[in-house]
Image (cartoon, rainbow, N blue to C red; front, side, top):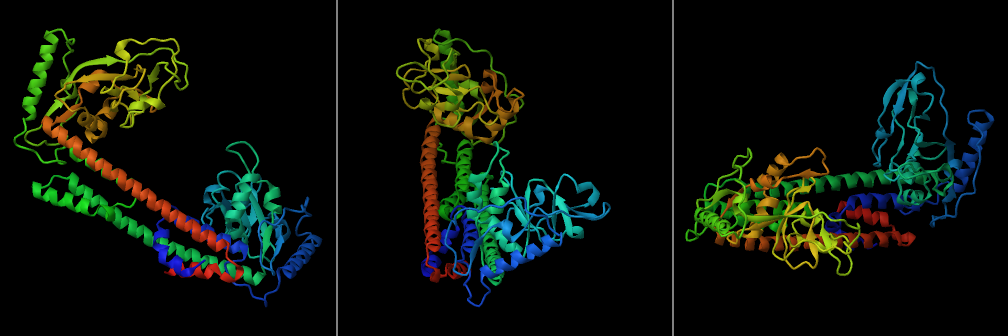
Length: 589
């Protein structure tokens, strides 16, 4: 690994998605491969350490202090090269597996359930104090300094393992979903590093047995998989270096958190200024100019772009996105003309008369409108409506020229998805009233609480597609902009709160709204010319948000690829490259 290159790009790398988690795993991987610290030829070789461990275990066995191992295994082939003075061994050879404790029943000891075992390296286990008599049976035993590994999914995959410390009375018991080793002449924290290393966890996942949700790491893998043993002195140096580098990672992560928090506050403050009533138009324009000019600086994550989209749509329905034109026909006159047109259509028999529209159902008008706007019920803009149809379906995607039925998901995400939402209807000819056409304004009357009453405008002609019985087509006045009404219905806070408050149904997975509920939604109506300008401006700004999201995604991808390249280069380094020193330089940099 080239240290200068890493230092030059480290700021970009540190902002890559999950960069710090990957760097932490990288440190652990280097540690168990012998690439984190230098080897010292004066250290007692690992081969001599293993001889001392074997002699000590034989002594303990002869003295009756440990039990005879039930079985042994030759283990697997070594998975990677290790330094010359290291040796491959097994956890079963360097420690005592699943030891038992003895203590008076009234002795106060520690109890450690799974939630108190940490996944992060460096975090300590917690414990509860219990009488030994309550927890000595039916639980896993351990003592101060023993190493525990969570064996059940997802705890194993998440890295839950610990060196038991600060145990009351020096002993304890805990969850049965643990493998325990009591090390003999091996640094407990080095074993912990091995248990949390990417190699051990990723290899172990493929070895797990059992059914979904109850998979476990077998004893064979825990006890007899290849375990790289450095000289004891090097183990201590490795643990010290890992602790040092993890502390530096903590510092970087904390600094990054502070940086992101500052950016979040700036973003929130900028958007709050736009959303709050300004004293005058010039003040609002200044706030908007600041937000747009500093968009790249205050927006660094996709979730922030989502906030920006929400603010744009909120400004649109409150008359703050485009300036008002005093020459526009006021909304009051527009609504009078729409009402007169509808009345004439009914009189001419071109459309049926609608039932009297109820007043907005207990909803107070949520904000003040510009002078030439006016509140209206959604139903005042509706000339007619078509209900959907519920024919027999085959339950799989449409093929050929068969008719398809539109699912509610097609109108639930502010865009029309006809090709993803059709089901085969062989030999069925639908009524004309159920057919979907270009320009239709469709609204779902049943969906989840979040998506119920979402609407969409059909942009292009969908071939052989019909409405389901959970979708309504509204025929809106030609004196209204359908896309503007979609913005109000789908994205304004007051509309979503209105539907949430008035939707029926006890299940969270399915809520319903009646047509009268839809018709009673309070809608802020601008002059028609301003509706058109609002839609054009929203389209322009949403395209900007699309580009910003794409840019952020590309930057994240570039950072991830750069990080991948540096980590791969480090792992492939020759032994003399000393990647750990370069990583340390990078962290300090």
